[in-house]
Length: 182
Image (cartoon, rainbow, N blue to C red; front, side, top):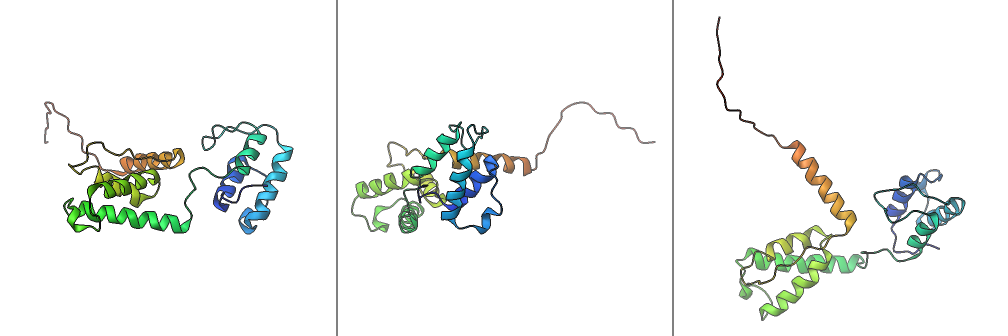
């Protein structure tokens, strides 16, 4: 049986990627959908290669992946909200001139520990923004590395590519040009 940490969105994504023959999967509950995916995978031996799941080659690999808890999903809704709140505290510190007196912290070490905890969850945009701004603090000797899951890193790369395609560009060419008006 599949692990409950895999959201329905991921299960639907697996159905689309591997083209599993499940009719109208959006209308099926998560538990029944998981059972249907396992039934389909029993008939399949080899999987098509996918850049979403490059480490999965066989149906048994996908079954094992679904039976184990989802990686990078250790935050439930409440923990995620707590992490966003902590990131907003860091952002407040950064945007108020990097002054510890404007925060609830007594010393810089407590603030540093909070930032260290937040840096582990940079898939959340607020946490990523907080760490980027915290890294600009002159009191910080070693900058925090922003840790992203590979899936989210690919999404950010795609967004940046799309942004660069939409930006207007001006090209200047230098040379001698001859214009004639008749």
